[in-house]
Length: 315
Image (cartoon, rainbow, N blue to C red):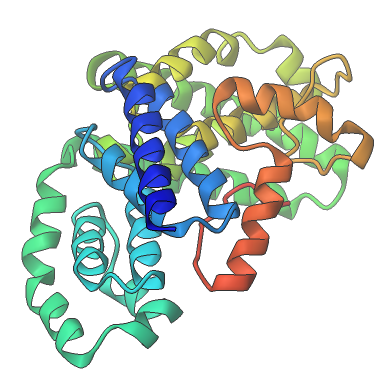
């Protein structure tokens, strides 16, 4: 039995090492590795998944906060106190708040008063490390753009008919959105994509672009701003600046709004009938996100174990 466990552990490490070794710091490879880890999780091989996460973390300069969060919970679930605390601290250095950590059911049950005291004492210094990694100038700029975009989009709700909303989005929101996209393209050209790695929040920029992609079917079919942005966004995924999950939300708004059955969507914005599930798994696999069956299996694991897996593409 011990030999089998050691063999399984060795195979896990060799597999993920081989994948990562193909292209150092290529984040398309990073996300492929995460998908393999998720397969281990649905197979209930939580120790193997934790070991694979550790190998991943040692191989990349930037790690998405979601992966630190999950690794810390896997460590708690498998009763590894040292790694639980270590990965919680790394997650704090990536932006996880103590308030959110305290709400986690696994940590409430597993961590002692002394553990919580230690985390509290280290918290401010860990947050300071996180803040130092961010580009504050770009962060402030994008945050203001996001707030302005939200307010403009909110005004559409005061148009009570579909025709009135379409007139507003095409005549009022579209000119504003075009300016926003132009500003973002300038930022990307100089600083890189302003996502989690650069400004701390992945959804600010993706929401701005998603709003642009949901103006109207007639607008999107003629839009000349988003299509040239697609290869730039895909390159940002490769650099670790943009999560593929943020990208597919952006792109799914565009594809869904086109209302063209010949272009398969990712099945996120609009629920798909069962017979179309297989059709959407291909573009999901191509861009590097989990298939719908894998997503559903992970949701089952969440219910069974209490481990929050932060599944972002739930209808």
